[in-house]
Amino acid sequence: MIILFQILFFFLVFLVFHTYVLFPFLLFILTKNKTLDFNQSIEKKEVTIIMSLYNEESVIAEKIDSILNSDYPLDKIKIIIGSDNSKDKTNEIVETYAKKYNNIDFKAFDKRQGKSNVINAMIDKSNSEILILSDANVFFDKNTISELLRPFSDPKVGLVDSHMKNTGLKKEGISIQEKSYISREVYIKHRESILWGSMMGPFGGCFAIRRELYSPVPKTFLVDDFYLCMKVLEKGYKAVNNIQAVVYEDVSNNLSDEFRRKVRIATGNFQNLKEFKHLLWPVWKGLGFSFLSHKVLRWITPIFLILAWAINFYLAFYSKFYLIFFCLYNFILLLPILDFLLKKINIHNVFLRFITHFITMNIALFTGMFKAMKGVKSNVWKPTKRNQ
Image (cartoon, rainbow, N blue to C red; front, side):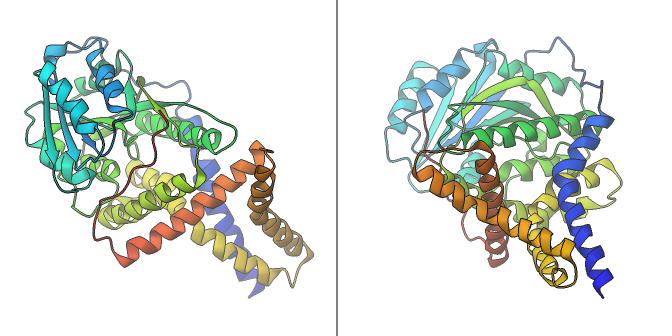
């Protein structure tokens, strides 16, 4: 019995190690000296940029300006904006732009719809072959639109992700840890693109998709970007990341705000897992392997950690090795308390903050799993506070 528990313990440790360390390392080895080759010249087709807004007065003018100042021909850009019953000056600001530029189509909803429902409604207003879905607080570079469209020269590419770069880093909060996490995600997704063409979900703040492949997001789904990406892959098309399609976003710095956001995302992740679990098979193919290794194992890591703790507790009575391991395990779990106390006296340790971030985000995953199991009745949610 003890041997069985030992095997199970190390198997659980291996699964966590695989999703966080081994899988990224395998991608590095398998894609070494490989790149994604896109056509350098692209046909300047009409593109529609769609945004759902809720109380975005602090950022929406800068966002629209970043689109209008693009190197892409203005007469080829259509902007469709839906305001999800905004209560601030968002509507007034957008209406001012809509009067000045005839390529801006604006609709203000008088009742909260939820982001994906607003986008579903706005899609019908577009006839463009390519759609760009973007958030108000994600700002374009000069060549963002051109670079998002470039991979579509390959008819098998159905979705293209942008390369999000973070601004507003502060040592007091979790912005450094969030930037590290996002940079790691960009790295993994880019290499999934090179190897299999099956990037696991775009950066939700800005990505492009073929109009014909857009599938209306279910009304209660909380993570629309991952749903759309998996639908594209399900239909046999590629989803890729273009690191040249740069956008900028002010990274989250408040732990409690980010925790709530991660709970929502985790809930949506488990909704998507239920919807697309069939894509895990065959697991030895690129799509199934990346879905399992990159996403599913990470989503259920909290379960692995809890089971490993319980088994380690049992084994600690029979072996000094497991007793030491158990003490170390619990010491690490208590480090966020030390980080919290040090933060109170304005001491910010980056290493401790990474541990706090990791543990907190796994608690968010665990919470989101139970919320998904209980069922989601609405996809209306309040965005995190903008720092711009």
